Image (cartoon, rainbow, N blue to C red; front, side, top):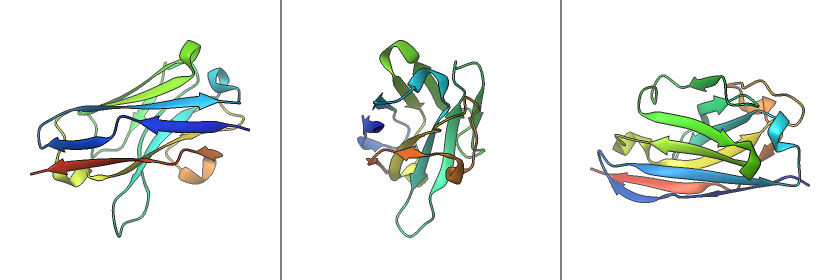
Length: 125
């Protein structure tokens, strides 16, 4: 059974940085694409970033492009989300997700098969 565990969330002032980690276990991490999504109170879950199986292709939502960076270390079965220049509108629960049988990154939540429990990111103004 695949398990994804996020960490690194917290409270930060506007303009600050955080790095989220997502540790995977129980599956074929190194051959599957990974993604980050977020959900703010009262809003639908939205795509943030995705990365293909070997880290050579990355995808970002327009709202985070140039500020966030997704990366992965397959030997550690971990994916990261470096978040810089954080703004109050970035406040949300952040989730990592894994595709089961595809190494191609995608922006669509329904194409991910496994999800973590989420980590809260709060950005104060």
